[in-house]
Length: 270
Image (tube, rainbow, N blue to C red; front, side, top):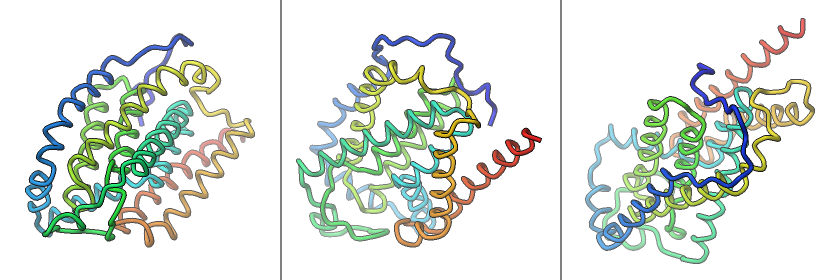
């Protein structure tokens, strides 16, 4: 990965700053939420009905990559690139998922398989906790993290597009209504605005932009990341991934990145 892609901060301000683009996106999603909620079931029936064996595999792949634990492991890789990205991403992922699950508890809505007569279902049968989509919240949290730290417009566009596709995959696999997906994206955006404006200005200066190999905390985090990668490769996909082979491959890629980093670090000490 080209290090010039990531933004180098010349100064750190502790004053809260509202991300105007994120607020504008949240307002747009708020306006979109009303018509989506009104036509929620017809939209689901139309989108969920667009399936072929080939597209089923594609959407299962996207929905697999939206798994919260898998995204946690992927974001953890940034510990060896820029620890600030990893910490921000993991905090945002936790906040987004926490907000989404709180709303699931407060607004208990049934899944499409319960409310619709015909559902093209791929993956496990889920009956409750429909609103909002946890996958959509997690995917958009990861996307917004990359957008927050990259200086490349192309990286930002690809990151947002990836988050949108992961979110939409939840409709195509029959797990969520469109309203649920939009609600999950809004959870991630709200969490992003709050974290970026309130907590991050005071926390950012405490986190180095480059990994400090001599730091005990960094070594513990790296060990935890390696252990999580091994878990993803060995056991996790078989029980929790909609497309186990892709889950295993993702974990393998994580371990390769970590192995290359550890080898370079070891060579540097000689």
